[in-house]
Length: 316
Image 1: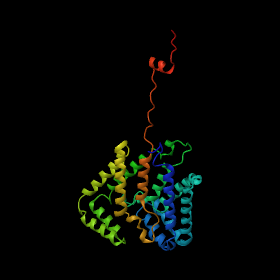
Image 2: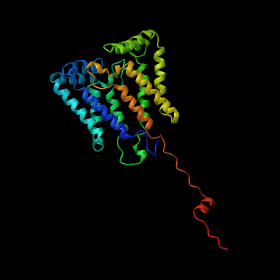
Image 3: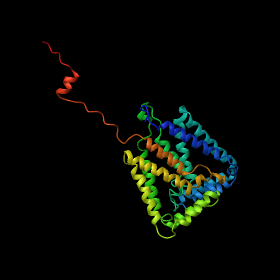
Image 4: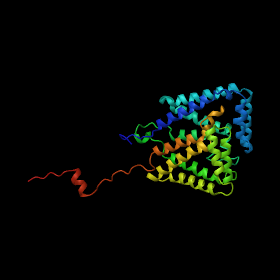
């Protein structure tokens, strides 16, 4: 810290969120997004293999977009541009945060199918629990406070709990059918290589070939890493920093190897994917207020206190 001010502030994270929303809004104006391909290749797959309470709303949302793709995408893009602009201005940040939480949760349900959590095969490597819900989580951790004290500028201390829940949840997802074998890891890497630029496709293909097809050795390593990243953030001091920094590095690896850097080259990318939001949450945790406020110095009692607080006059 410098001059008593936190390095990571709620306002700083709000501005970062605003820039990400502006990026999302700009991505909506790609030519391919103005066609039915957006509904067929982006929205519809999010509901496939999911329970009815997810697949039906997603299918209906895709049907609505298919009828008027240009209008739908224009509306979506303008909403997200407005959210980004609102977050960049201090006076409108509170309203923009509230609106962004509602919009993000709506997109998470109708556009991402709750991140595929109920469809099998979801993992942090491939983008679970979904970028939209991470937008909402980060937004809540930096909800503006009215007091101007430096401690009030820091992100909420429960950001560490959100981080831990995400990574521990990722460890559980990695143990579920569809993600619980080395073969599933190899397949995820191979799928990420599909349609990617040559350098990224080559990297994924080489790594997929290196992963042993049988057994669960790498899966167990990944589970232990994710659990350590989550639990370490609940500690204090150096342990928290090491855990969060380790999670940020792991998120970067997931972004490249499992999420294809958001697949910006596809023409149908709607956001940078989950990893950048998870990294932003990690930065928020590093700047969050400590679990307990600093202990106040105890007041002395007894004769010493009296002698120092009220000097006695001595007359000769």
